[in-house]
Length: 173
Image (cartoon, rainbow, N blue to C red; front, side, top):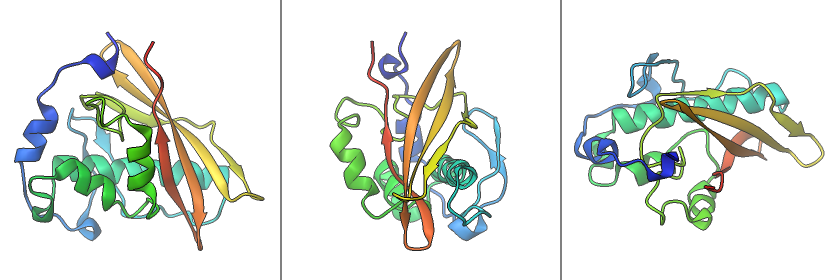
């Protein structure tokens, strides 16, 4: 069954959970399913390259998953929206770009493109970067039981930083 059709109460459970976390205090932790992650507020690489695309994408997802599992008090009642709008690795236009994609209207989390969190996720090493356009593209592979979902993560140069600008969810077949 396609992950978009999976029923789960995990987002509701996460929305009801509220504890204070400061992004600068994030340390390595585990994802909601026990998979080790290494959340960082910002990636160590700041140059513009395919490697930076991978590092920024990983930092973005680690920060998002940590926020969703340990939401700050300010996110109470709006955890998903708060965590996607307050990620230090995203552009200021990221929330509106996500909304334009329409996946949230279909009932899925627009960051993971599903109704439930993946069992694990990994940024693939086939990222690209165009220095002339200051844009990059990474691919995130998510595991849902025996199924896999691959998302496209679009990044752009914002000043002297490379940041996540949009996520393109695959079209369900």
